Image (cartoon, rainbow, N blue to C red; front, top):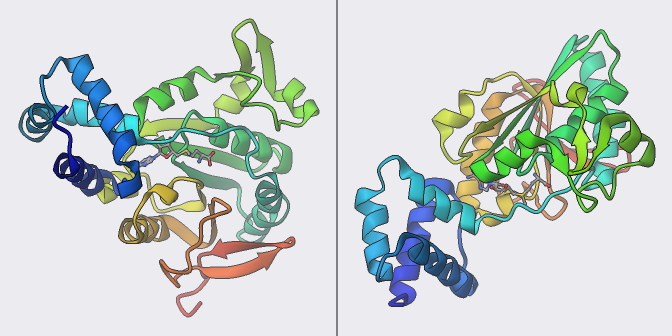
Length: 277
Ligand SMILES: C[S@@+](CC[C@H](N)C(=O)[O-])C[C@H]1O[C@@H](n2cnc3c(N)ncnc32)[C@H](O)[C@@H]1O
């Protein structure tokens, strides 16, 4: 295949411009393999022909979407990063509800992949909130294949390996295909296809989120694209709301808009309650 560094850079720049995902030089072989798969699937004769198609004939962006899916990592599981979820459940959630005397809580799961994270958040809210307090989880991802799995809501052993036994019995039904999330967990989660890098799409979800979970997503972004996405989240959150990133991710190089706060033995980022912080 005529896939040298020039072709690699062209495709990388296209992916970066539309999604914020930055494919590093070290991943040239990975991208090459995935592009080769797409070329074979579509029966193009060369990488340049495929690139021309992407640039000029891919109306509606369907093929670009396939390429993006091929470059994203969907790894996820229920109750991932348990200690962080404990801080959310035991400190942040009660604090937000109590402070604002709230009767409903809105949560964004950004980069929800196959649904384990938003369903986990639904389970936690069922456990922690009184029946007087409603909640809703808005779950978004760019990858429609992952979203189909999320909507199906049936998982294998690997996905539920960290689910406490009592929760497995209470919130899942064992079926021949796997563990099916029960209806009363699903009911509070809405899945939609949204590109985090598209500010119009992202902010159309609303400006009243109490919590944003964007874990293990921005690791694939450059600092500039991270900043853009985080600024979007900031405008979508209520004052006093919390944002949760993956354990290897930090906002320190990105923004000072959120306050770093120690809570329950861990560190969390909070949108200041007032303009002065
Ligand atoms: C590793 S998974 C993280 C899943 C979950 N948040 C967790 O921590 O377990 C990363 C997800 O981010 C999604 N993603 C990457 N770039 C995105 C973008 N620009 N817009 C929306 N979702 C994106 C991918 O499709 C993938 O499903």
